[in-house]
View 1 (spheres, rainbow, N blue to C red):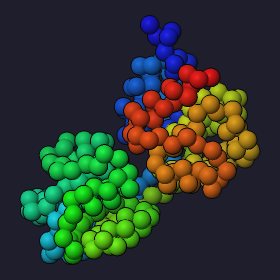
View 2: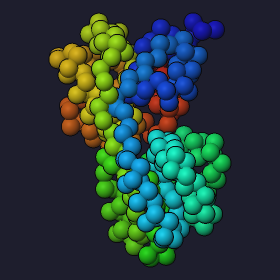
View 3: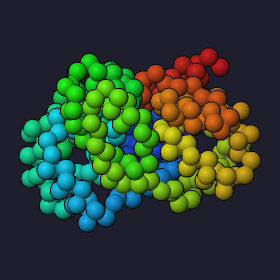
Amino acid sequence: MILNKIFLKKVVAITRGEKNNTEFIRKVKQEGGIPISLPTMKLIPIDSHNFCQKFSDISSRKYEYYMFMSPNSVEVFLKMVKENNLSHILEGQLMKSKVIAIGPSTKQKLESNNISVAWMPDDYSSSGLLQLMRKLSPRPGTRVMSPRSGASNSFMKEKLNSIGIILDEFHIYYPQIETIDQIWIDFSKKISNKRVDVIIFTSPSAVRYFFSIMQQVLSNFSEYFQSIDAVISIGPNTTKELISRNVSAIESKEHTINGTLRLAKRILSKD
C-alpha cells in the first residue's frame, strides 16, 4: 500500500527541467512523493554557420569512435544535423565508427534516433568512460569525436591524450542560466519552511546555476540546507562543486535517476 512508501508526502527536488524529467516525476509520484523539477539552465546552440563549418571539418576526418556524454548533447547535435540537411553525411560517418554512450539515458536517446550504441561503461561517468577506453585499447593516434557542451571541463580530453588517443570536442551549445519563474518562487517558499526533504544535483553546471538563482530569490537559503534530509550528487565533479560551496552531499555510486532515488530512499529510511 502507498502508506508504506518512503517517499509518501516527501518533497523530492532535482536540478533538471520538467521537459526531460518524465521518468523522475513518474517514479517519485508512484512512491507517493511530491516531485519538483528545477530548471537551472537553458542550452544555447551555436549558430548554423559555425556548426556547418565545424561539421564539414569533421566529415573530412576518420573517427574510430563517436562519444556522447549526455542526452542533451545527443538531442542538440542531431537536431542541428537535421536542420542543416547533414543527416546523410552523419550516417556515412557513423557507418565507419563505433558509438559510445556515457550511460543509459544517453544510450536510450541515441537508440530512439536509430543510432546503435556499441559500448557503455559500467560506471556512468567520465572516469568510467576513461576505463572503458583503456579496456578497448585503441591504437595510438585513434581519433574520437565528442559533440558536447562548451562549458565542459578538460578532464576527458587530457586523460585520453595522455594515452595517445586524440579527442576532438565539438562544442555545439553553451549553457545559460535559466529565467527565474514561479517554480523557483514556490521552491524558495518550501525550502524556507523546511518542506524540502530531498534535493538531487545533476551536474557541476546545475550546482553553479542553482546557487546563482537561489541567491536572487532567497538570500540566506544556504542555512536551510541543514534541514534537508538528503542532499545527493550525481558524480564526483558535482560533489566537488557542492563542497566548494560548503555543502555536504552524498554521492550516488550509480549515476542515474534510479540510482539517486534508491539512495534517497535509503537515507530517508534511516531517519
